Length: 174
Image 1 (cartoon, rainbow, N blue to C red):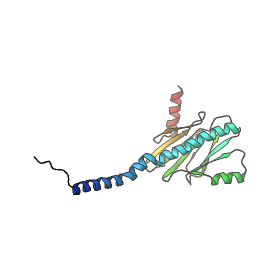
Image 2 (image 1 turned 60 degrees about the vertical axis):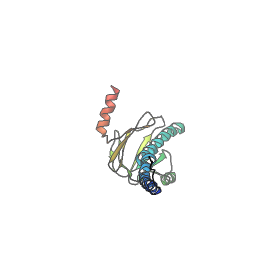
Image 3 (image 1 turned 90 degrees about the vertical axis):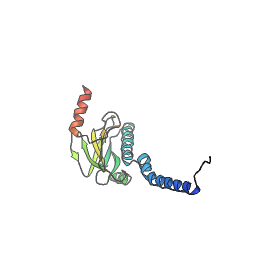
Image 4 (image 1 turned 135 degrees about the vertical axis):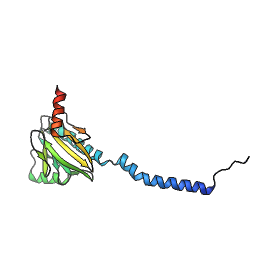
């Protein structure tokens, strides 16, 4: 009985098909695992909030996280900065990844902003002005809540309204 193996042509065809599939799949996998733009935006804002809260305590000065809704950027200011220093800080803005937009910012106890620049205050006493930031990317919406006493943000991977969030907070305190 004679066993039959694969011919060189059959092996080349299989390797070629596998290579094509591999090269087609790589960009999608790379983006999914390494370049998730929404995760980058959340990380950028989260690190900035944490650093800013600690800096306000360390420097004993109130600081602001400025969300520029028009340009999709954030920058930080201290309460005692001169106009020249403010311009310098604005030039060093951190930009959200492409396609990720700040839809709106809501300052709890204040107003909802859909355009312009919004300042979220971090007090030298170690607490922050509570705020909701809605980020969008295509059809995804993520809600970030600036925690007033924890020096961090809480992330909800859906579109949380202010009223819904307040009722959740009220339920947590009971």
